[in-house]
Amino acid sequence: MSLQFKIEATCGNARGGRLFTPHGEIETPIFMPVGTLASVKGVPQDILEELGAQIILGNTYHLYLRPGIDTMRRMGGLHRFMSWRRAILTDSGGFQVFSLNELRKVNEEGVTFRSHLDGSSHFFSPESSMEAQIGIGADIIMAFDECTEFPADRARMKSSMEMTARWAARSKKYFEDHKHEVPWDSSQHSAVSSRPTQLPATFHDQTQSLFGIVQGGMDPELRKESAERTIEVGFPGYAIGGLSVGEPRDLTRDVIESTLEHLPADKPRYVMGVGTPQEIVEYANLGVDMMDCVLPTRAARHGLLFTSEGKVSIKQARYAQDAGPLDPNCGCRVCQRYSRAYLRHLYASNEVLAQVLNTIHNLSFYLDTMRRVRHSIRLGEEFSF
Ligand SMILES: [Zn+2]
Image 1 (cartoon, rainbow, N blue to C red):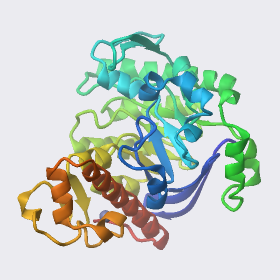
Image 2 (image 1 turned 90 degrees about the horizontal axis):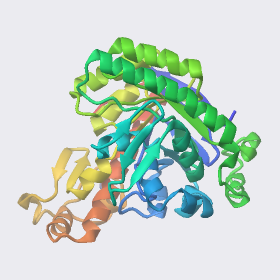
Image 3 (image 1 turned 180 degrees about the vertical axis):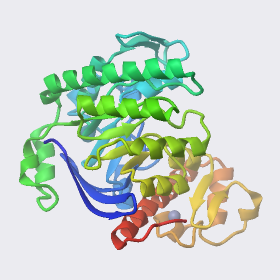
Image 4 (image 1 turned 30 degrees about the vertical axis):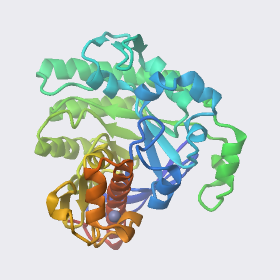
């Protein structure tokens, strides 16, 4: 076993649990900040630790193009490269290949695409995605899938889902044959062993864990079939992919709810690329254990802040002389120290500090929201805004 998942409390369909990884323990349900290029944009790693981030996400497509997998390996993997000792998850690169490359060519073997940086030609297959993700060395890595576009007709959704199922089997085969090649070294293991209360002794000689991804577009029957075929391949955790691709939000929710029914109750369930604060609470209440989204970090850089009193667009003139904190109910270092007037001034003046402070607050709000959800589950009360 390379990963252990324990459910310790339930409330309705929601589950409160713990996921044990080679780089520490994660309390679930969890929100994972996105650190695309070995950086959660604008936030130093020590502040991520202070905010209570237990796991962050890296993007294989971006890290493969820059700095490249060879550099990643030579630097001892992503944990060591970015000085992050806690858990990391990488996506397979599939989503970026599909969303950033209009000229991609897909066949059974894999996807040929052009770099968005310099136009150079590259090829991703289940095998090469696994090779890249093993080189990066995240604790949890994802099977290479095809993210079906929206809208798509049923024949297209079905053939895409079937290819994802075949790619899942190829991903697992390559991973099982090569998982010992992960570039973790003894210094990282000693970082783990310095926290003996958090990790069972059996975790000292661990490998990565590969999760499967359920596709099937917006069709509940195809989602069910995809879940069954992915479970047949067999993974220690399952993701629901292919959402947040332009579909209406109530459809996102319906697909999540109906797909969850077909996933094993004793394995972690991860919904990729969602959502607003309200949505992550709603999905946790449906029984989702893991989520990630660029929304809190990307919105922060555009001056859109999530608070206990609703959304705040800090650029507005009404905040120019507002001496109050951004969110009076937030304990983050930004709300404890700075006024709305100052944050508005930084943003209006295009100061780099605006992006830093806004991102710290938004991440704090998301992570705090999930902390409250976990607390509510343990009390047996459904959390809602
Ligand atoms: Zn705050």
